[in-house]
Length: 508
Image 1 (cartoon, rainbow, N blue to C red):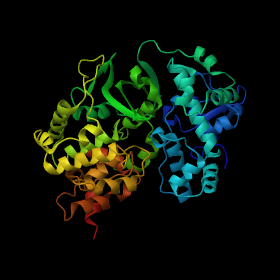
Image 2: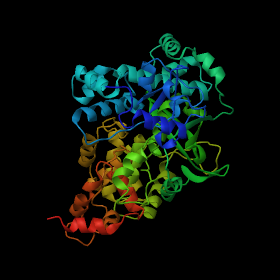
Image 3: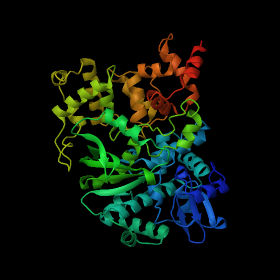
Image 4: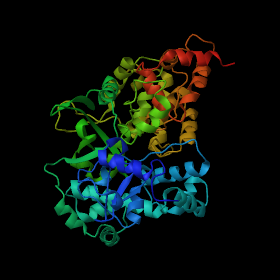
């Protein structure tokens, strides 16, 4: 396999580099032979000469070739390349392996290794190495090493955490190994890089996360705002820019870290500026990954729109809203079964008011946490019934909470989609609609499709047909593997309905 991008020819990469086109951010990196540095396409430095440029699909490939990350454009801020494909099995397997390596949630209680990665994928370690190198041009360990180093680089530049803590949080087994890897790859020791960074200026840590345009920020915040629960989240403006604030807790290593965050969109720079309370510093890499998932920052609009634009010409900037906590999202999905968004929000508000733990934040509108799994797992039917929650939904909520608290159910982006959906459907009161909705938002599955959703059927123009769920499923085939994005666009009323209805009528 060559080290150049398979998606773009070298000359195309150079044109994107000259234009500093943010649509290609994270899709390739440029190694400059005259400096030994590799950059994002959006780097503000003067464009290097064409003969001095080498192009790589992944940062790990650039580092494997001996290039160091640019300190100005900071490759660790680039959106990740999240590939989903209906291509051959080796392609899918390699990208699923990379996805598992990218997700801290996958390895909370153990250190990743090729053997453990292979066991999760159900193949041999030799096969994983072979298909991974064929697809990415580096070994799984080289890929993982680059991810760890870039995570450490961001923590060093944006926080004042001790180097020892940065090393451990980034996944290194010891400070000695961290220092050696840092010096070998970046020709700097960690403290030298920190002196070149800006560092924090307040008790809250601020990091910048890149995304690829177009991004419909107003639509994303409107979706979240319509479902927001007072005391745990809000949508507002900060310094004239749209932002979202909320409280949440993360369990890691047997300890719960509770705090708050404020996410502000800097649309001019195609960045999300994230402020995180110092109480969450111990799990900052995990917070960053979850925020990227919540706001769908790693989506590649060009790839998605190549499939969906013809049916949804007005939806090119829409993303799939996620959540910071898959467990919370699952509970709220159950509360929303067969009722309006406003009614579900009312039930969720009552639940938080009754069982949410108090927390102090800089904002008077953020005073509680969503009830922890252990709390809802022990909740009585009488207590939930007094909130207006029906018995069937009570059983589903308690079942989800007990499964999550007992670590039998994982609801995050690296969980096995089919196995997790099967687990969900085994719980009382959870059917296909709820499982698909959880897969769409919590598991970050880009091909989820809740065919039984009445609003979706209406948007597709199949509600009045015989067996509308089957008609919707058939009509959706043209949008694979991006049906989650099609759902969001349909819910926003952006579908050109006539072709879909006609397609559905043709089904036997």
